[in-house]
Image (tube, rainbow, N blue to C red; front, side):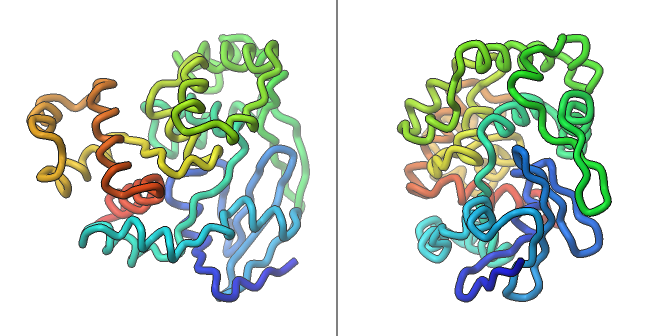
Length: 289
């Protein structure tokens, strides 16, 4: 199938390479991806998206093609640094992931680099997910809630989760036993949805913000990791609360109070689309030569 983008600004490669998704791989000019029970491939040829395995409605929704990117980038374009990031990665869009997969993925992602996260999720899907064939290749769907709820800690540890194995097991059991509908969190406010996510094992401030931003459409969520902390200290120190910069420079980690202060600054400074600002800044900093 084909979808002509028209005046919709979109860069498929940038959107899939910026660290928000972990279950896509590129072969030649095609990206192969999995979401829920869907396996599909997609590529961008000029101003046209070509894809197989899903329909146009899915592509529009999953890749956030309904977002008014011109309005969003105008809103967050507050200074020369983010202006450079927006210019370099024009067409970067936030992807609408499945909340269940996003929640477990970011619990697994704590203190891991992207390559390690991808490997862990692959092993977990291979062990607990359904095996499927698509386009002459073998794929494993992301494990269902029921499958992970029934997994042993030892089995999850064997997938490379380490201490995160217990978090994944406990969270999966709770979602399964209490029949929690994570999709319903979309209807909650940012603050209330974040509070609900904190109830899950292994979910702290950063994991919650990642899930809120990448799957629950809370565009004000502003995940802070070592990269984002570095950006804020280098580029926005003169605008941060008095004393916070000195405090942050004393140690590499972030206390909950410090994290909250940085998030509050970002939401006040960048506005309702602070999450978009975070992704542009994060990818720009991470890819700078």
